[in-house]
Length: 249
Image 1 (spheres, rainbow, N blue to C red):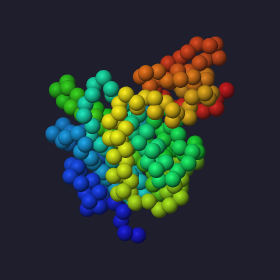
Image 2 (spheres, rainbow, N blue to C red):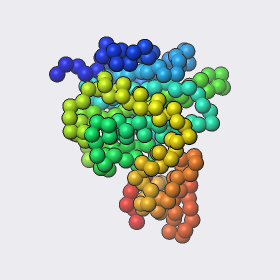
Image 3 (cartoon, rainbow, N blue to C red):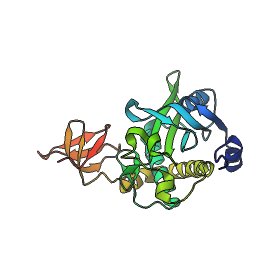
Image 4 (cartoon, rainbow, N blue to C red):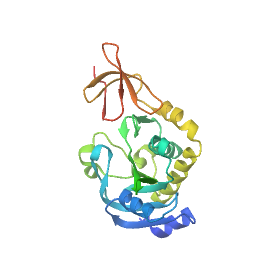
């Protein structure tokens, strides 16, 4: 099959958007942060076919094999009092991308794991670009599985899925990149609606969960996106980060 991701195809789909593309890159977030600190404007985009040392949440390594996924980082303007919004916007955009291409059963596991029928589709990592004590930009890193084999998924084979599997069709990765970036910017254009839209997509609420040592019923999220868990004693515990395990009694 003709390569579905290249600088030429991305350029044709993205118009005049500032773009850096490489067949192999260590980390799109690292490249985007360096570019932002060197003066790249909001809206600039970094894309790699293969990402060797990408990062996931909680310090995990995120490797993206060539030819099978999306690895991109979008430079966003700095909004110091709204650093939560890029995370939520990224999750919402990936969820809408999957739905737009025909996926059913799309939801978000708190805080930003987009899942289809309970299987993880993507990873999202926003990072800040600081210089001289000032926030210069926010970089929104996104990795989306498109056609990974079970072998390429490794330990995630039992819990992950692909865009092509859930959408039931062959997909063009360059088109997916262009669609995803447009969706992120559309979501961010209505900042006042993001939290409610994200909450409406959460599949975690109303379920028994464990996050670290906290066990109980996931009741709600607050205005900062923290998960509110009601313990067996009736205490409401606020959790700001961690892996959620579902179905824990």
